[in-house]
Amino acid sequence: MSIRVQKTFEALFELEEIRGIFREALPTGLNTGEEEAFQKKIADLRAIIADLEAGTGTPKVTKIAGTLDVRSREEQYINIHPIQAAGRLTTEARKALISYGDGYSTCDFCRKPFRLDKISRPGIAEFHADLAKWLNMDQARVVPGARRGFQAVANTLVNKGDSVIVSALAHYTEFLAVENAGGQVREVPLNDKHIVTAEATAQKIEDVKAETGKLPVLVMIDHFDYQYANEHEITGIGKVAHQYNIPFLYNGAYTVGVQPVDGKKIGADFVVGSGHKSMASVAPSGVLAINDEFAPKALRTTAMVGDLTKRKFGIKEVEMLGCTLMGGTLLSMMASFPTVKERVLHWDEEV
Ligand SMILES: *Cc1c(COP(=O)(O)O)cnc(C)c1O
Image (cartoon, rainbow, N blue to C red; front, top):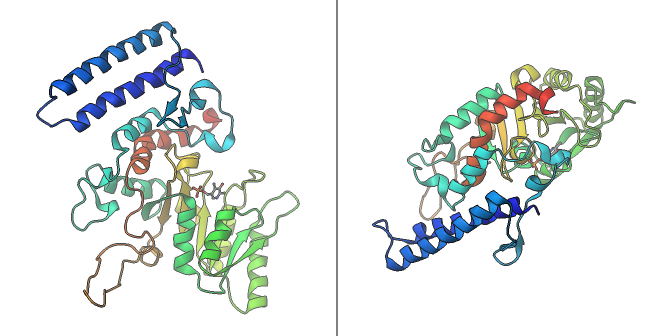
């Protein structure tokens, strides 16, 4: 590792240790022992900074907690792994992670009615509204990965034995979400250019109807697929789904945060995106955006009553299991959001 990168990590770690002193100390200030430890660490930090500036010295810290290597891939190399490009954190997201990387950090100001998307300090409620607006949908929730968005939708719409239309290039997490809900995937075949067309989707819906006597309950298609990165006829597919009155889930794991996505224009009932893949956020993170028609279903609140205690849990949403991204994941998403919103407008430069 370049010595300057090495020393940057050492300085960050040293600062974290200084921070640790404050976290352990009383709010009234450092006691004698703590002050000594603080001065010692400041001296160490100065030495590290001097090495950092001059590019001198030898590696002193190579492990975290004695076992974990320092991950310096982004600092040392040009990372061309396509799946990692849009998930790299912004500097602001890394700051948010330092600051909010704590157990229940988002919950400091959780007040009645007690739900993640209602918290206003930090501005989580506003972020949810911004996300929905940005995707031109009516409601948005953050989820631990696009897959959890598929799961929430599948668990809402799919009953045992129901068919769900996916593409012959569908991501495995779509298969699993449907399986988890007790449904059956039915794949739309590709044309000779490896494209999923609206026409083929309509044909598949007809085939399923003829074979099972029932229409599929959901159409779930990736805008760009993971094998060829081909673009599929997403708007046409949305139209076809609606002609059959079947809800349409737009899988934007590669697009939300990378290109502009307009849910209404696409005709999506659900838009799903991946935070760690495409929104410069810590994993696992993602977004599920929903239109007004399906929000009451997918975001239904708990009706469960305890038989002994008669307890009920108010506005907690069943598919979200109450709250989802509680901490650094969400705050990294929020901190990257301004950059992400801007960069989708500059796709050519990003490429
Ligand atoms: C990565 C990927 C997913 C899953 O996204 P997660 O956020 O990791 O759950 C879904 N669909 C496609 C096409 C993907 O590439």
